[in-house]
Length: 314
Length: 314
Image (cartoon, rainbow over all chains, first blue to last red):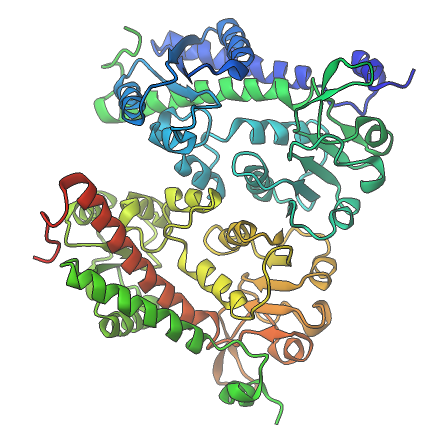
């Protein structure tokens, strides 16, 4: 059997396939230790999730986040606001969470209703509670090689490349897609690690020329099967961040990435499946950020008020 | 005569040479209009320059900044702090300037004494007064395609490329040097304009391979004559941000860029001289930021307190 599904089911049989569940698991083990240590010091990490409006698409994500948070001992506080909530009400709600010392992380689920700006809401979250790594200051800190709280998907994608064991200094990397929350942050993260990075996008004149010389390719554009095996260098690492719902031949719907898995699998040295690749790592990075944010706040309070004078858990 | 000096002296005779003085001049004309409009509205832009310690290297820059500010009608307030000033004293001084509504821009001269961190001081400046564009939030905003206050040298270098008239969407650009204040910001600025950008640095395996395919090259590494004519593509635009003091053959000292001007001039389609290229544009961008910052603060105050209830100029 040569179908992608068969391969994904037997990861042990194909060294090429980067298993996101395994990478995520090993990250979560370290997070669990951190959370336990924080609790011992009376700092219980507490993540507040904000969903606004119907937010049907977010439901699956929220359920998954709650499940992972529960396992790690992180309090997960799931809040829903009505479709009609105004900008001023949301900013006030975020300001209240910023000021509440028992809240150590704030997560705004996408999408938000059209009358609100996700960017504005995310910039309203205090940088020390910005567990999504989306505040302009969080992004700026990456540029400054100061990875405090990085954007979850970008950090997860880079973790997948690290799982190959390839040495990053001098590695020729091509990132396809220059979105603010995935493509560009991946580029800075890799520059900080010493890779030579090219960012391609829909205006790039000859994508294949760039892809053929790349030791590693990241793709995050939301176009199913954009990258085919013929376009990449034999032995390259292919990290696929796309999540696209398409109709299979039998009429059922299935989820695929931005790369054509069949042809790329044969040419690549390493490849991430979709699903089961970057996705499961992303939620682990989110929880790592939650633990890190709680640590940062603990340190901040201790510096301001001295140790053990403040108890986060009411 | 074929010497670089001769060419620079007769810019009209060589269309290849990007004249920084002319580009800077046209930027300053627009800034002068902005400053005049701000003054009419009783908002006098006021830039406070902070030099700490002996800061001999900064003296020339400060004198030049004052001269340009004076011409534009910007108040230039030149402050000097002793070598022994503590971190706490500096942070308090910056906090006081942040709180003072008559101060619309704060500029921290480099270098600072070793016991201080330039990064920490710059991050202490309020983002609305960060005329150097160095605050993490300012950098993050560029990544978000939101050029509010950009880092002066990077913005100046991009202005020089724009002066060629080349269309940026799809342009193949190679940036040599991945510093936080020049190389990386140039990369994001160009990505926002639709260019395909590769960032190279000392860990890049084969710099020439990248350079030979580039429509435009930016170099900012501080290595005299790193880039030679053989390494670039005929007709490419070469923007040289390096400023290096070297000894000429006759023993005198002279300032050169990171490119070998003689050989690159013959191959390039456009080239920036050093001195007289990016340098004179940088101070113009600084002053543009000063005017922009004053405008932003004006808008911010009007939003908070209503129009014309606040007069910046005491």
